[in-house]
Image (cartoon, rainbow, N blue to C red):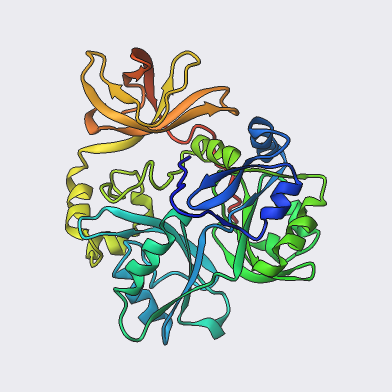
Length: 380
């Protein structure tokens, strides 16, 4: 979890509610955000795995890409990302990356094609808070005249995550729980007009819910009134996504790293792999053919000492082969876990490595990701 303290800190519309709930507030991506509440990070993590956690993610950027029709808007975005947006079905969401000319990742984002045919030509983008302004400038400066970007600063975003999330939401919105993983639609949740996607950042089943910023406090109170729901902060969000093997921008992803190195080949659909037509396509297609020089891997330290980001990874002879990008204690795993990049020849699960922790080389092993199996709701 990285914090950005440069400049005056912004606040999400839920700031006062966080304080009322006893949150410890910290600087993150230019915002004052709750790192934990009264339960504490460990119990918030465990509650999300067992029942349902509610996360404020209103600091993230929501924006519409708007053109005359889907084909035009999709083509404009496909010139910037490697995903197949043209064939994205109405009411579906796709994960992808903004790429620079070298195939490095400017940001990772979610793209939704609205379910309503009246909104043909629109795409909803959700981008990382720390990259919001960079992304908006990057996208706007590369669009054809017929397509425009419209940020939605008057929208807030909540993530309801965990195995009881669907049951909680069903009490207020039967339509939402009929969604499968990565499906999205507008829906009424109680008296609130929302846009809901069945997605999230914890590896659990759950929903991300966009609502008007001036209604989000009342909306959050509605969900928190359910005994199954507890507020959860950035600390639990980070430990949950690490156990789920999910990337965090500024850690696993940056402008020097390609989607192939990051293990995100699954997010580049076959047509785009073959046709290219996105920034850095030549490098990415070469890495797809020949393999990258390094790969993102899971790492399980032996013993109880965690290895934090920046920790050097060594082979058994002591030669440097990579670096940890995220690391900490995995409450569900009940031990230290980490992700990082190693030279490809060392990326096979089961490979023994060493981690330089406080000047000592501690034994560890390359392992499969995720550390905790995903439990997304996929329709059969």
